[in-house]
Structure formats: structure tokens, C-alpha cells
Length: 445
Image 1 (tube, helix red, strand yellow):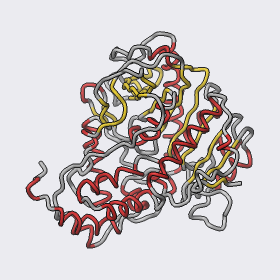
Image 2 (cartoon, helix red, strand yellow):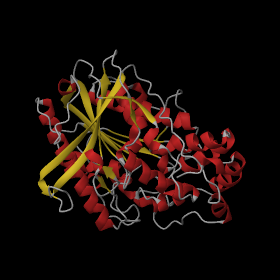
Image 3 (tube, helix red, strand yellow):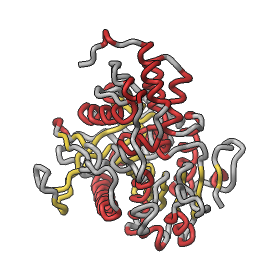
Image 4 (cartoon, helix red, strand yellow):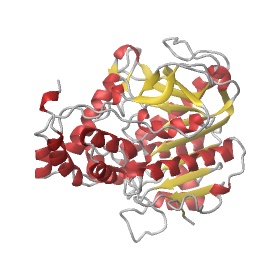
């Protein structure tokens, strides 16, 4: 148990800020890997880290930024079982998945806000992040008691809405894309987020818990294996959404579904996006499944190893549907003389793509800046210290020096514009050239 009496703001500022100043994205990613681009980098070390471990801190809530769309949001979790695929570790020896459905809710819908994560998942991930970032043994991030902007199981808005699938980075939780997902739901999309069991930790109904992968840096063969599994997961989830749209309940626990949810899904208009390995998953799924009309990759290589390869099928052959590449400072396709950031899979994809394509760059961002990591380090550090400058420095070390509000707004705006164009058939001048409203975003020609 945390000893709150030992908490000292001065100790937090002295020890925590010192540790944060030596924190870097590569170090955090090495301690909790998310992408092949982090190979060969060292974890956080030094006297400041040791000093940080001498203080005890209370777990602190995070604040998911409010979405900007006109719709209220509802959410429900679904427990799905793929009886066509075996998993000897599961109770029924079949592949099990947990997904969350985020949807536009009726304007008068009222109910409790969903928590950011279920308790066991929150505890494991908070401990992992606290150790990786600050060298602390006790959980610092109070994910289990932090509210999202979505209400639990409230009635869905009347009408049919395009469906967007989301796949997280390896080995991250589906909840780390909440800020982007809630924005799309507030803009009139049904968004389905997937956990890929045995990668990140997954909590099933009744509190049953499956831990995540203990692979620090996956080999190319291991990466191909888990991406292939993710593609199969995605196609299965689409199958289950089809059953849901036909009036059936795919949840194996027969959870009561929100009113109007079945009628809300327009499965003639399906898109997909993902962060890191989730972007690769989106591309590979589109390559084999014609039900997905358009996809986006947030800073994920399309090779099974960024430097060594081999290329994935989307990079090798291109896609016959629209696809967006959205990159950080750590990924680019135009300068092979800079091998640390050059992604030959993006260059190959650009050459081989057979349909609409766009490559956006967000300078001043790190890889983790395309997930919820882009805001919650600030929340926790500021909540503990009331030190805006220190919290801003911590957040910059994790997600990049670009202002965190502009970082998220740019991602939300361009993702929405992309899906509005290809799932709602709305003209989007924002996708045609650089915008004076978003000078941070560069078009890579």
C-alpha cells in the first residue's frame, strides 16, 4: 500500500524531475517496447533514477482530452471467441479476444463514464510504466480510476454510422488509443478497438487476466507471426460485427447490448487505422480483406524489421484502396542517407501503392506521440508536483517537443478528414495541400 504520509512535493520535484530529464523515448520504448524502430537502445540509468526510487508517490489520475465532435459517446466491451482457431492456454482452448465498441450516443443519454482501463490491466501497465520511466516500484498512473469521455452502455444514436477498426502497437493495450478513438466516435463513427491476446495484458469478464508478452525486442520472424495473428484477429472481429449487424449478439457471455447498437453499424463503410505495429496490421489486413475501404498507419513500419526487412505485403505490392502514412521524426522515406529514421518499407509502399496515398509528417514528435502517451505523462507529473514547466519537460521527453495540444489536435483532425473523405464521401481540401491552420503538419511529396 502507498504510504501517503511519506509523500513530499519537494521530494517529487527533486527526484522525479531529475529522473524525467534523463528520460527519453528510446529508453521508455526499450523498457516497454512498441515497435521495431527501437532496436539496440539503452534503458534509463544514472544517479537521478536511483534518487527517484527513494520517494513514495500516490497514484494519480489522467485526463483524456475531451473530443471536439458534436456527439456524445457510448462504449461497451465485447468478449469474443474464435472457435476456428486454437489457443491451448484459454479455458475453452479457442482464441479469445476482448474488444471495445465506441459509438455515437443519443443526445440525452446519461450514465456513468467508462474508466480508462479495467483494474488488473491498469495495475500491470501502471507498474510497468512507473518502473520504465521513473524507476518506481509502485504504480504511479491511476488508470483504473481515471474517467474517459464515454458513457457505459448508453443507447446508441439513431441512424447508421461508418465503422472504423483500431489495432494498438506491440505489445500495447487497446486503451492507449482512447483519445483518437473517442474523437472519431464524437464525429459520427462506430470505432472498434482490439486487444491482441498474449501481446499486451488482457482482462476478461469476471476478472480473469492474461498477461502480455515478455519479448523485449521481437525478431523479424516473431514480428511476422504476431502481425499474421493480428490480421486473423481483425478479420474475425469483422465477421462478428457482421453478425451483430444482422441482429445477433456475438458476445459469448451474452452481455446485454445497448439499445440501437445493432442498427448503428454501417458495414458497407469500414475503415481501419493503427499505431506502430497496428498500422502494419491495418495495411496487411486491407491487402487480404476487401471489406475495408481505407486505412491509416500511425508511425508504424511496414516491414518485419525496419532496417533489415523483409517487407510486408502492403509495402511489397502496394494496396488497391486508399492509405495514409502519418509519421513522427523517427520515420521517413525520402532520405536513405539517414538510416536511423529511413524506413525502406515506406519508400517501397509509396512506389508500389496502386490507389490514393498521402504521407504526412508531424515534426517535433516521437514515436510514442501517436498514442495516449502524448498526454498522460504531463497529467501525472503535474498532478504530483503542480509544476507546469517540469511536467511539460517530462511530456516532451516522452512524446516530442511539439505542443501536446497541437499534437493531438493535428492527429484527430487529419484522421477524421481521411475517414470523412473515404467512408463518408465528403470532399476534404485539408488532404490536398499544407494548411495554414496546421503549420505543424508537413506533406511529404
